[in-house]
Length: 455
Image (cartoon, rainbow, N blue to C red):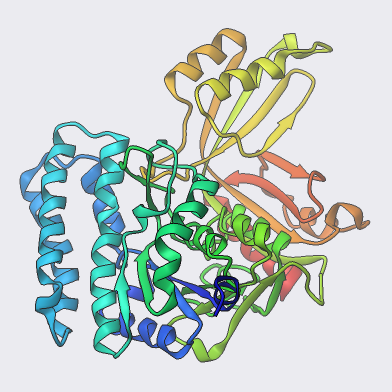
């Protein structure tokens, strides 16, 4: 079989934290892999809850007793899986070695934390889970091999939210990984990579999906599967609106908007590599694979005006005001020069004659509310008045031809009379309408909109 023919038949499967939470969950996910002969590359997340513990340790835990308790929780999660293995001795040494490494790094973080140290520490979640998952696969009769994704997933050195080096990933994958896919099922890590110096990096919180898409692109896969704890994408999060309904098929454009504007089932960057290679993406539940899921494709048979509703919390609104903007040129150019210099990523933008409002979204591994770096704040303050508002939530309606359809927004804004909107963005994309509200108002607004539009 030629390399190109092999690639066309490859399915890349990614399993999230809840899908590898414990021995039972890992066994379910392993069966999904084994039941599909085309699945050759599997990327998995850390066991559910592990990354949160590692992030807390990375942020610096000075109390030795609390640090010990966190380590015991980590140890219990992984040793509970070991206890159910037929041959735990095959991987027990690897697990304990990694846990010892976490303990050492946690002490360093307590003394002096850094973005580089954070990446080095939190990456251990995926390194641990892949040892256990590979052993379960082998004990179920699969010819599985654990592989360190850092050998091929090359990134820049922006710790906490590294950017992938697409061409280098392709070259390294063809050289090192593709030959192994001929007769092995490769189990590897999502979320992590390495820079040119071999230092561990991460792609930001939720980056396992992105990793899987990058690797699907690198091996020219025929299908990318994202396995999570819900059977596909819904009109909104069922925890927000219990009557939310599943979406069987959705376009790349719509799904990208959903991911970017808060639908937690997909990482915002996931679909970029899939779109580049036109790789169909399937999203399903590892708990109930028989229920099917959502297919994401370039084109779909139905394109409704309103497809879904998404929420994105933990938003920061920055308002820059200066009379120098009035009928002047160059002001915005200077604003964005300062932001670029300090590597500040801007999300949404709204302008008036004398002010510009920008939103920031937190996507790195550190967590917490996003804010301006001190240097950027100081430079902008010399240019204009700077106001920062936090504790905001972005609500987005996703659909088709929204800015081109008369009356499409009346249903939306008729429902919002009693609420104060901090920003509205509409018209730049035919696929979304979004607005900022105080976090305390987000849930009732979303529930009301879902009732009026989708129920």
